[in-house]
Image 1: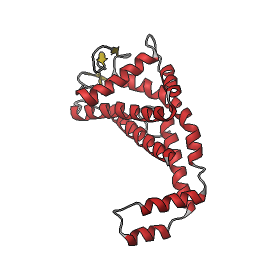
Image 2: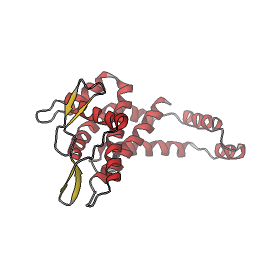
Image 3: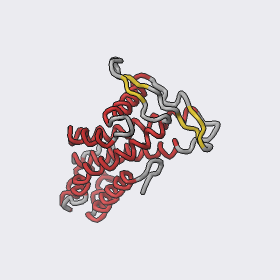
Image 4: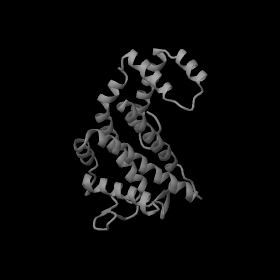
Amino acid sequence: MINDELVNAVTWHLESAAFSATEINAFRPPADIFQMRMHYSLYVTNLLSAADMVKDAHGESFETAIRESLHVDNFSGEAVLGYLRELRNGIVHRGIDPTAGGEVIDGVVFAIAPPQVANRSGNATFAAPTRRLADVFRHCDTAMKPVLERFLDPMLFAFTLVPPETLLAEARDALGATTHMPDWAAELARENLNVEMLASARRHQSEKLRSLLQASFGSRST
């Protein structure tokens, strides 16, 4: 069940990030400043939440691979990841507005990346690796997703190979643990459980996550 929870949670975070990325690419003047701030904030918090969940499962080897993937121009991967993380932390915990400044490029309003972000104590600062925040996001999205997929691949493979009897047993246990469902509804659900339906649902979930991992920034599927 641990694999199931991780696959479901990472899918949720990446789908949320992908939804916000499509919005980030589509703000036309006069842009709604509430919507801009919301989607820029949601994008970075969801991308890093997905990465943090995989890091919890795989440890330092994943963190190292992410840092190595993020190098760009004169910025090390550690510097880029530090900027992204402290931007997220500032948004969530310190009220940073990632869209305080903006410019119009080809008819689309883009936020200017905050030039520097600091950690909570203020003793470490990280500079923006690009002028526009969407370009930071695009770079991180493109670099991090292949690493996420590589580390998730064995889990996704195992996710679709759960034995039929295990699928049925887990589904029945889940129904039994659902306290808000009337007894007659739970019994009806148990009677209609079948292996093909459960296996199909898992295949769909696996394919959905792979599609999100392979999608480009601003797209919700490949």
